[in-house]
Amino acid sequence: MSMHLQLRQSQSLVMTPQLQQAIKLLQMSNLDLAEYVSQEIERNPLLEATSSTPEERRDREQNEERQVKQDGNDASTALKTDSATRAEETFDTGLENIYADEARADTMNNNASDNAAAQEASAWASVGNGGSSRFDGPDFDLESTLTEDISLRDHLLNQLGLAAVSPIIRVIASDLIEQIDEAGYLKIEDEAIAERLGAEPADIAAAVGVVQGFEPVGIGARDLADCIRLQLTDLNRLDPAMATLVDNLDMLAKGDIPKLCKLCGVELDDMRDMVAEIRALDPKPGARFGGEIAQTMVPDVYVRANELGSWGIELNADTLPKVLVNTRYAAEVGKGGGEVQAYLTECIQSANWLVKSLDQRARTILKVASEIVKQQDGFLAHGVSELRPLNLKTVADAIEMHESTVSRVTSNKFIATPRGVFELKFFFTAAIQATDGGESYSAESIRHKIRQMIDEEDQKSILSDDKIVKILRDQGVDIARRTVAKYREAMNIPSSVQRRRAKASLV
Image 1 (tube, helix red, strand yellow):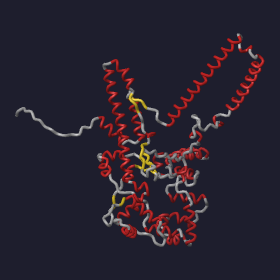
Image 2 (image 1 turned 90 degrees about the vertical axis):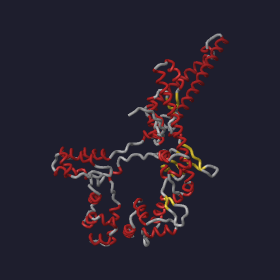
Image 3 (image 1 turned 120 degrees about the horizontal axis):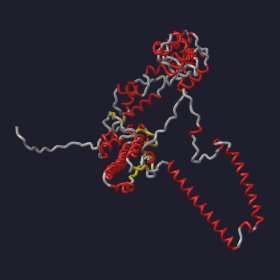
Image 4 (image 1 turned 45 degrees about the horizontal axis):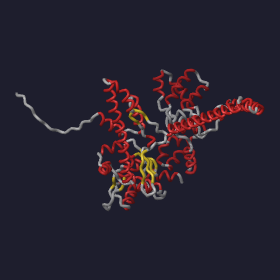
């Protein structure tokens, strides 16, 4: 054994905290980014948020207008005071002695006008905010005038409060209401409820019957057949033939109409009327309550056609958080030296790095989005049929970045185009080869063609998967039958047999 020195050279990737922060910011959505920046502003005293939202800009403009108006009023008051002073010096008396009669009359008229205006303002003040017609004022809030949608739970509990039932049934029914899902179904079994609540099966059944008697009709059903059965009972249409049809909904879904006619003992025309009645019912009676307002997807990037015939690309500046580094505050506080100076130095470095990371994030998003628009120009101009196959490597090589960077940029980012708002990952689709060895086709465009062919198929000529494969190959698309079946199932399109039965039942 001996001691010796050895020199060794190697390469390694060191993930500094700053680099980790930059990567983390790159894959954040705008909502997560705004929350992260807000936390950094609270933690770092040298960071300040700038007023960039339309509401803040409007408030600032209104404050400036009020200040200008106030300055004008002050100037007018000073002018009047100066004029009165000169008049008193000229006439060697007060203004009340100059044109005394007119001054007294004007004073009386002004007092009367002021009293009338005060009474009118007092009368209108009792009207409240509802009498205001200023829809462009800063205090007007359109959302505050909307009525809140009642939830399904509250709607059922209100009916339970009016129901004449025993206390035990009321308690059980209240628990059942809590178990009803958004569609209005009660999928928990009576035995499980009885075991959990320690109640008698008869009481559970009675409580279920009470809940199923509430509005909307069909609430508290165990499955689709039970829901339809409750609604038909309420309409007094649950005769033996209809009951048999409800018990065999799976056959109806398959389109086996002749067999259903034999089971129900009705003619084909009567079966069509029965099916039409069932289709007119509500399969999800609870879905109409407590629906949340759909939130508009806010895009990160806008794409618009410009006058030169190309596409203009810009970031959505309203959704990007903007921060500034308060160097003046740092200079004032940092005069103390010592630990304060060291702390401020760390804060300055952290703040500068955050500002730099936000700027780099915006530039990277714009760079990736520009290349995607360049690659998918046909989609923007002609639609999904012209969507080209694209992968991360193609974009990464074009903009000289790593594939992982492009992957992070396209996560949780949306782009607004003339065709609609899409996630950036929408434009990355697999390639399907052409039969003649030419340019490949996008998988998304092939799915669009399959759906279009099925939508336009004739009832007497239902397209099978083999027929769709033949049509696509005639158009130059080299695709297998299992691929067509996979795409069709992904789009929730039934098979050719099911479509033929479904369309035959509508004739």
